[in-house]
Length: 388
Image (cartoon, rainbow, N blue to C red; front, side):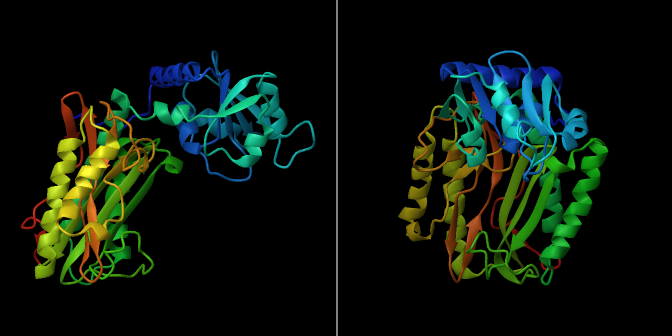
């Protein structure tokens, strides 16, 4: 069943359950405490979003009691405004600061001598070296984020509804000559007022919208947006992309489409992409191994003679960001579990022809999976009349 969309902030008991899950994983790793610097992990446990800059924000998770959050004094009112749950603030005056009053001094005071301390794999070196005790690189908060709660599923469903509606408008307004800035402006004007209406306390530090497309001349190079004034043209394949993070929860939808006409050399790769997509949706279910899903999906392209034109994995996770673990990727041999949220986006990229990729945000369930985004799929549906 598709989750009901939610736009409200997390309740306190939601944050308590997350912390309890992190502590379960800490216990399994025999950790006395855990140190987190990743803004995404800090947000997951506190609902506070911050910029990464020279003033560190460091979260210390112990086996019981309140979270302890080392923050610059400048940000104390900001943290108090946004944080949800039991969070004890440990402030330092500034960066740099005199000896005895630095962030490192505050951190050292929170970790017992000889403690076994879990540290994120992405921890900055300066923080890593300041942590006393025995350090162990383990990503327990990232692991806790893999399975979504009912609340999180609702937040992601809200973002999926938002971008699905916007993407329909993008396709309806497609026409030769329309540029990237025009699309970005129109989609932002459509989505931002809705976001702010649905939640007037929206945290813009945890809200991002990207609405872009690639015309056929560059769609074979999926991350090429060097020409900000590139425009739609007759024919295709164009690839449109709308992804967002709304108050800290991501969503993604992408489609391959044509304006007016479909070049003959684009028909077969489009249909092969659809076949790979069907396999991906059928295989992305609990019990299957993610790396094996990617290998079997890639085999569809390889059998069609497109193996050398594969550039990326079948999909990636969605959660408090729009791009995170888990990964439907060869080499990521983790079993799919109910409650994961993934993109399904197998693609193939042919220089001189273009790129072919649909992407949807999909949640795994005990019965299989449910697609949270909504858009056209077939070649007929995605051959758009010129002028929209």
